[in-house]
Length: 366
Image 1 (cartoon, rainbow, N blue to C red):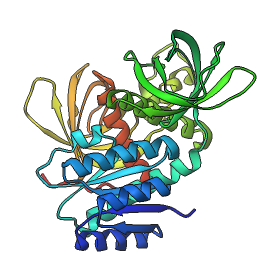
Image 2 (cartoon, rainbow, N blue to C red):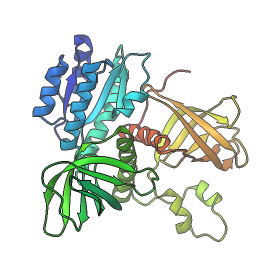
Image 3 (cartoon, rainbow, N blue to C red):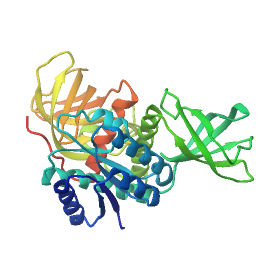
Image 4 (cartoon, helix red, strand yellow):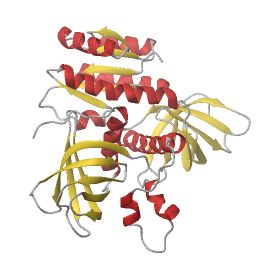
């Protein structure tokens, strides 16, 4: 599998370090110090990832706009942004970044981050097919409003839908739909890529507001993990914790429904706080899924306690709210995550993507 990365970076020292690490991983790197040249290359070629030395200026914004246009064609291009150490990563994640690196670049952290990015690139290469979905949508175009259709599948670059109405082959088409499990509506525009006699139409996304992109990316990543679990993961016998906490009257199969999502074994240092308290309790996360984790600590918090878990890595700081579900004195406790919005869930999915790519994370000292 030949992976190709475009490095857009004016600093020769940083570019050399990136090329060295990418070469170690057998990833082909193309370097340009010029953002304008980088935009030309995006127009001509498809890359598995782009590493951008982000300077928060007009040229960087123009490059990101060009990359979003490219993503409507390639769908799978990852973005790694290089930022100043005092620059907040959150707005850059909002612009579509998958990972961030901080200047000055260090060899070890760059290796860790690019290893995680490589795992995502490989999975995106394998994924190919869109994720099935069955959601009603409102469709509008020049001369017609509030047409009805059904979204049949979805990727971050396009969709196919079924409608009784023939859509125009030229010009923008506007959509509004809600994905399963989400309350907020996705609003975007696209253009027709193909149509067939059965009433199905392929749509290539053109303009996607950041709020809608975040909703789609969170849903796609969540359901991609579920597809990987259903296809690849072998059946696992019940863990002792599962048997101890299984309610009376429920079969093992019924209680196993809590574990349909993929879980990642890890040893990730963290701090856990009882909700409303500022007293940290050092702990280790040893088992993480999109809906919960196991917290190893000798004196776990008792009762149906609301907690906040803080995880710091080289690339992100994550705060997760949750509720204690099971307590094992001397060992730890099981925690179910509680999400206030889709952005909170997306942060957990980003952490899972890093865990999926490698056995360790570059944890920051405290």
